[in-house]
Amino acid sequence: MSVEQAAVNRADFDQVMVPNYAPAGFIPVRGAGSRVWDQSGRELVDFSGGIAVNVLGHCHPALVGALTEQGNQLWHVSNVFTNEPALRLAKKLVDATFAERVFFCNSGAEANEAAFKLARRVSHDLYGPEKYEIVAALNSFHGRTLFTVSVGGQAKYSDGFGPKITGISHIPYNDLDALKAAVTDKTCAVVLEPIQGEGGVMPADLEFLQGARQLCDEHNALLVFDEVQSGMGRSGHLFAYMHYGVIPDILSSAKSLGGGFPMAAMLTTEKLAKHLSVGVHGTTYGGNPLACAVGNAVMDVVHTQEVRDGVKARHEKFKARLEQIGEKYGVFSQVRGLGLLIGCVLTDAWKGKAKDFFNAAEHEGVMVLQAGPDVMRFAPSLVIEDADIDEGLDRFERAVAKLTQA
Figure 1 (cartoon, rainbow, N blue to C red):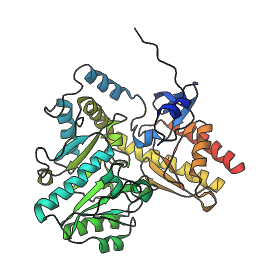
Figure 2 (tube, one colour):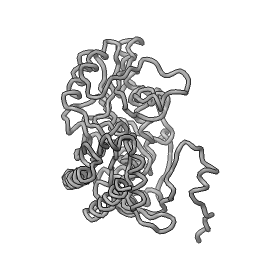
Figure 3 (cartoon, helix red, strand yellow):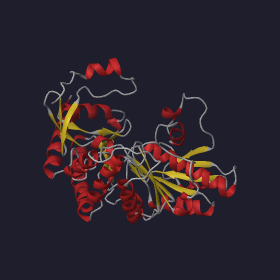
Figure 4 (tube, rainbow, N blue to C red):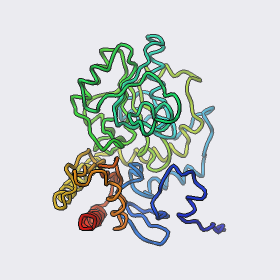
């Protein structure tokens, strides 16, 4: 017997929700694959992937099946106990990566919080309390907790909340000389995104990451890679560090890891992990059986040669068409990124107008993203159908045509 749901609409948001978001004017109510339908039944092609989260699209049968099966078995037991799905997923992540130990949590911010706390704890235990400084990149994004927002190099997110966490400095991304000047024997960690996501879909230069690895080794500091947005197959590799061949000491994963179910993980080595001994860090929901059951299903699909090859092929398809659109209408100066994390840099004439492209696209029935005011971002499902790519890009081109002719 179903209980009738109260009718709600977009206007209700402004009456009941904290106004820290400005959501679109329509409400999605159903999704299948890379298509979404709103309250009025309008269909849209989804190139946003829930901000690089819906790694297998909407309602993928493997994920629905895993969640349904687990939902009828065991939901939550806390960390007083372990559970089978968590152990299975941890084994899969260890087998597939540099890591030997896994810490599960619920969001990218929590994974980064754990990573940064671990880095400081290791240095504290091995070298004393003075070695606590963190070097990160300008325009980076690592989460919204006070610690992670302080490490993220964007003052607009960190100002206005009282004293910031001290010992954090920022250098321009991909500037190895600046990094060399910033790292000292007081540095406990260098924190980098292999592909800056919110900062404009900016892939790292190989030499920059190699240099960071070398500097960390020379100064007994830890290299932390934030792969919240770039991980779980999005780059065409399971994690982007594999593309570069530069191995971090600590890696954070979230977003795509749960395919839409909130979950995250911090990966590290056994040697470092032992510094988070019993009681040093924790989370109530981390490693929740529901989340880990879904994560297992995501891992089983994404960590296959077929999907990884498919990501690279889809990248070429997107890039070719987006470059064509950019040239035809004079709107993009560059199309960059790895795999299915793609950024289109707006030309000088359209700088600052990413929101206009976002709105125009929605009116034509395609969901895209911004990465700041000057870059359009595409982060679709890794298994998006060719027909959906073609239809979505046709709609996006219509949006660009209308915007440039207005």
